[in-house]
Length: 311
Image (cartoon, rainbow, N blue to C red; front, top):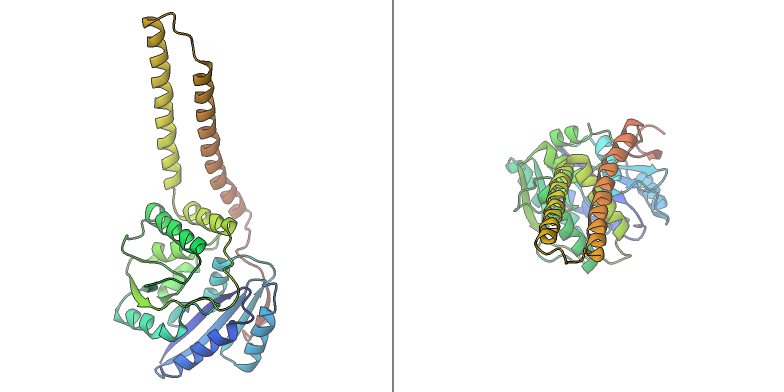
């Protein structure tokens, strides 16, 4: 009999988490060919989410709880759940009820067809306009920086096989990026259509700052293409500067009475100075993350475990 492990990062979900867990239980009761457990990872939520997780762990032996000492982010929470899971299939989903747990059989069926990973795809997303814009930017970044297939849709609701998880959890550096880890492991990935529900409680935890941080994590951890782009931009800027200087010299020889333009010179200085600072900042971002990784900065710190056999 195969086992499914569910991993749910939890943040500000005290009012929705119990319903998500119940929906998983009700669905798996109709799938007797599988056993299951659920890993609830509290990302230092400021509300009573931790108390809800404690209550669920006391009530059910197959629900496991993990609580972080501070907020490390959704992808760190996923990594913690993946490391503790032992299912033949691992399903990751949100804690707000927008991702339909009762359609998990569609994802599992695709895995059993032979795919290594399956992502849920939505006809009509019920996220806010800001969140949808962030998703589009993230989609573009994945295609350009991580060579994601153009026809593959990625979301926070996905299922992977055990060997994929075993490879993903080998990543020990800071700033994990789960989508990049999946794409690094396999290209045998499929999509299945599921419904996407409206949010019943609260709002998305992703602010502009968190989305920017997530994008930086993605392309600095798994791609050197930004550095190559920086090299090309630097070469192009140098060419423009050389061409403009040559044009100025020729113009001076042709017409000595032409005054030298102070504004043009200042514009060139500001443009090239700004480009240099931008590219140096990008290089500094890479170097800073290398420095943090060399210092063995942890992906997360666990304060408490529940139903996991240790404290």
